[in-house]
Image (tube, rainbow, N blue to C red; front, side, top):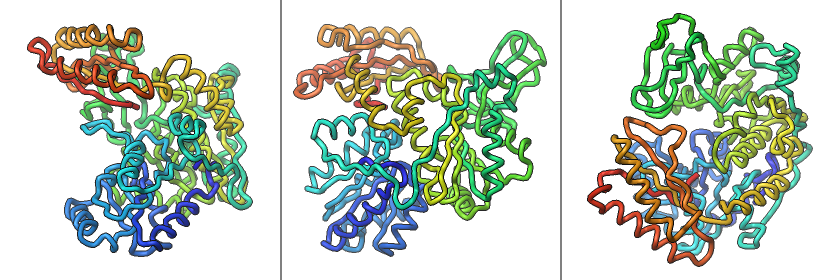
Length: 514
């Protein structure tokens, strides 16, 4: 079900749930991040009362065990289960409907530890086992689901208009190149965005500002020799967090004391480069000291109570501006939000990964959809240097299908999903030469069977994490009847693990990685 933001997908889900419950069946309602869906759970409980059970990792072991045993012994008492991806493994006995809301969201993919599964795909498998039906819902479907719908493999229902008198927000690009050239920038804000924030708050409406990077500044650099402090255990620069005056590694979590002088040349001329949510919050407070500003990212959402209070305050109008990472792009249905600002669109588009454009489009389209969800028209302002980028053009016109048509052409030309299946091997070891040799041996084992469909071994952008050196290998499998190819990949994987020479290298296989 492809429905624009605010089209009433949740109301459709509620009617489907009601029909199944009335017939004595069970429903599994999957959400990408349970922490951000308190408003949805409140709506479901208001409609279905105590029939709604919730399952996610923030519950205590006792609460999870009670739900598990209840589903085993009294399935009729738990007709509706709302949960994150792990809820797939609950012991349903009368499962008739699975709803995967925001099915495009990468949070459905289990990255680490094993099993590395995608809950969206496993929902289809589970439904097949149980004889249940599946509804995949999103305003911006994943490329795989969109392709399956276009090919007729999935039924395809579209909701192309918002519910009631609400209309899609107007989107406007703000050219940062021009603004910097004319020296019009005020900190990291274009003047048009500041004016729009002022105008919105004065009429008692609310604002969401999206920047997909937490912390204060991603880089702390010496002005003389350009040295950047990095983690002692990972090949990554440290991010400055002003709230507790610390430098943090966002890969291993280690915390360091910020230096007062450069470790390389001893200069005291240090500067902060880049833009995180913490810095936006501070700059905004300087421009508008009277505003009530809050921040929603992994640093502020650590405790369940803190997160629920923040979202409750925002819903009640106690917060004027909410600054956040991708956490603000999903699950927020606030009637007074009429302005959304995207601060660094280029940063989303320049990620070195074949899904970068898809992910950037989804994030921008989803956060834009938070604006103007009731009667008042919404506005979206996108700050970018490359305002002529074709992906931004699709965001500007809310053209989901146009974007997918263009992106599918690129995927087909380069044989990427949905036109192939991927298997990524990640090799790790403390000795760099040993991991490099093992990766080369695996590639030589695979190449005679897959030729140029084996990519690598590749040294990733962050090639050293938690004292382990990393190499990646990507294998493209053909769609359809490719059992022999899967057997060949499995055989190569097992042979390397059993090898006396390379057996000590840790090797991780991830099918359909995101």
